[in-house]
Amino acid sequence: GDEPAGRDAGPVAAGHPGAEEPDERAERERRGGDRLRFVGAATRRIARGVDLDETVLGLCRASVPAFSDAILVYLRDPLPVGDERPTGPFLLRLRRTDRLPDYAAPAPADADPSDTGEFPLPLLAPQPEGAASGTPELIEVRGGGPLAEVLRGVRPVFGDAPTVREALPELLGPAREIPAGRRAILAPLRGRRRVIGAAVFLRRPDRAAFEGDDLLVAAQLATHTALGVDKAVLYGREAYIADELQRTMLPDELPQPTGVTLASRYLPAAETARVGGDWYDAIPLPGGRVALVVGDVMGHSMTSAAIMGQLRTTAQTLAGLDLPPQEVLHHLDEQAQRLGSDRMATCLYAVYDPVAHRIVVANAGHPPPVMLHRDGHAEVLRIPAGAPIGVGGVDFEAVELDAPAGATLLLYTDGLVESRHRDVWTGIEQLREKLTDTAGLTRPDTPPPLEPLCDEVLDILGPGDRDDDIALLAARFDGIPPSDVAYWYLDPRAQTARQARRLARRALERWELADLTDSVELLVSEVVTNAVRYAERPITLRLLRTDVLRCEVGDDVPQLPRLRQARATDEGGRGLYLVNRLARRWGATRLSTGKVVWFELPMP
Image (cartoon, rainbow, N blue to C red; front, side, top):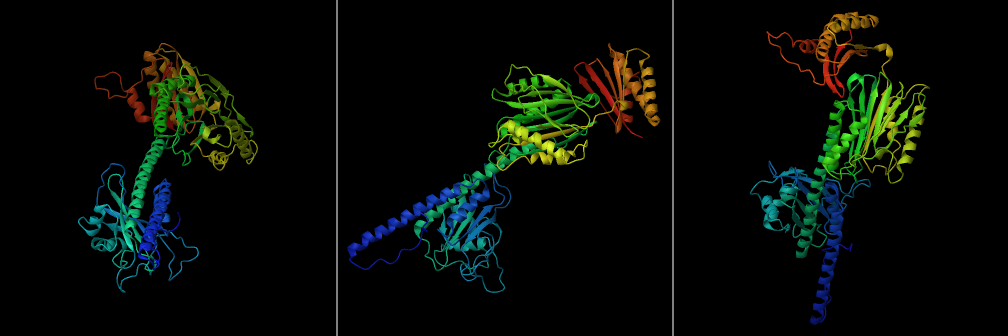
């Protein structure tokens, strides 16, 4: 099957005329069998290609030297995808060449036999001195020109045909002399919808010329290559869309909430799996808290990525309502069931409070988080596993744990700890040991830097372990010390605004922030007055001193205040306008028990 196709047979032995016919018939049958075996092997090699380069390389390696001594493959630039109609001029780009070594000037020992350099001189002799040399890399196919006419014909044509002799200089360059006789075949590459390129097969003068049946061989090679290119382009576009879909649904950058430092990593799956549905998120909550989320939609497809995006958006919305973690998972479970009966996912949702130094965690079938303590001890947290999201009819349980300052919480998806070579619990133990070893590289009682820690964690992945995509979210708990927090309960009375101003002024004096007194008193008075107007239960006033001064006022009324332009005759409606003008940032968040209105002022 590896014997070159298309070679001339030796001369028929002289003899009886009746004996020549069986010999000629046998020779023709042998050549036909050789061609069939060659075409079968070549098309299998071309079909093995998954991407564009592999497909074109398969054509080149199958053709040289079995079918030709050299080949040039041109593809349309840009390649059309699916049913889209090409725009702009018809351009062909030289994609790849392959050739036998130059007899006259042997190639260097380290040369790549499939590079896109010049062809050997015995095969393509240059024109007289002074003419342009070299094969053009980009060719514009002129409408109505010889090359356009040949490509429109679709079928391979010998190089000695009049039209082809006029068309080949457009491909090979005007400085090249076209091989004489049937030593060149120009084969258009036609995909499912249109011509997408061309292949030129060339033979040396010392080799037998192409025969009529070789046009059928070239047609088979061109057809399988064009269909393979079409398949590769469609596959590449789908993979690109899925990758972009997944990446754009992940956060571009993590927030910088007070009292916690965050870092993340995301690794797409290996080529065999492509996209998945892993995601992570960090969502600031009222009171300086932050929600930490990591999830994994089962499967590897664009559908998985799309479901991931919907669940992530739902989780962000639920976090904005400040629901408890177990309630967030319950609503995510309901959302997954609405998306379809087979929409399954795992998710871990945690809320960290830097003031209380506590964390509340709920799990829906996800691998447990690992906490690296400040002393270097790594611990796998005992969280009830729960059922995956989408099962339906199950309850989720939340656990509240200590989150001491200096500790690091690691949330991850199963692609980090599970593969064909290890089960999930073996991987979790390896992760715990890796965190312990990494912590030992720093001084005692000093947590390792967060970004290098994430890189070290990924080193537990061995060769062949990238069966699934990986999402990793690391949170270093810094906390807010009690000395930087002032908190009061105030009864909703007419005198409450004056009381709030006095309390805020005393806190600022204690913190040596007297420069902010006038602004804080004014804004606190306005926000507290709005809360007192409608509240029925005691309101809360809290001041946080971090890199900014943050003030939070909570009440039991769920309606959120809206900024509006007060008319000249209105008695109220200017409070939020003042807050908007004087504060660096402000906002309002609805809680399950009411709402919180907050504002921030820069430190003097």
